[in-house]
Image 1 (cartoon, rainbow, N blue to C red):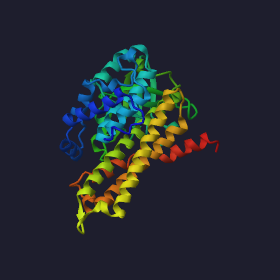
Image 2: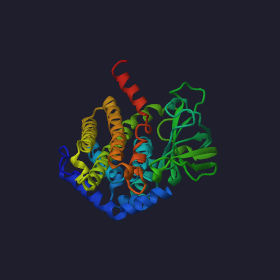
Image 3: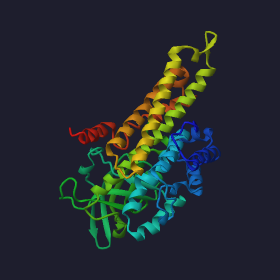
Image 4: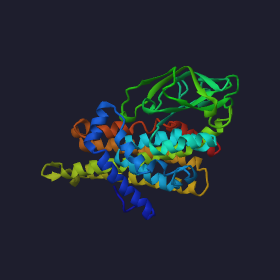
Length: 384
């Protein structure tokens, strides 16, 4: 990974990048990634190694046992994970950001004290359950309900496309606690034990990101303690939106790192591929594709660090983070498409890693708020 042209990263940030790459080289060697991808198994060894090294707490407040890192610190970490392997990056992001930030920001002091240290240590994993059949982008129209019954909530409903629910110990559930309320009202967020009676998790076979695949989750009379309510009852909509910026920054950062990995992989192949007596990099038809890939990787990286700087400066950066999510995820897929073309038949073969890179890149423009939705967000910011 390019550790030179890193846009003013501090020595500590560069050290984290080097250390993380070394750690993953030991805990998740590339043949193991191929094996896990083929079997659809979660990268537990690498996840646990990152937890032992303290990286899961990088962005969490020091008062809760974290390192109190900045958005730029965290962006650098996630970009590095995305460069090494998108699956381990998504594994970390799902627990620490997608689900965990709701505990950190909106859990009661007692819930924070109970759960945050276990998240940081890797003792528990989380999943965020938001999407439902028919309401993927229309979150306000969810139908899963939670009814107060004494000291518990009783939950009924169905969720789909829930990343890592199959390995989660707890599910951060977005639900309706007032089914009669208007669209953006009556929404609450609950922490639900993933193995509670009435919870059924059905793994889904996905095109890519197979080690951190999605799942269908069913709730049939599931009880969870009312003390595990995250934020105010019926008042979670604003809280949900608060966490989206960091989620989208992470998605963009993973894609930026993956752009560099794909570009390096295709370039190494092309340098060693000889046709008509020359390495194929001698031909502009190939070298220009690799140049375009390098441009897209660099553009993606610039966009995520720009957003991180804005957020560290106290700005919400709603428009900028949506732009970064679009630029990075679409550049990621274009890089994979060009890389596959450069490698020709080898790129299309599962004997090489480019086929996996191509599959893994495709989810970026879809997940975490489809890029069509991101363009709607930007349009509203522009007053349209």
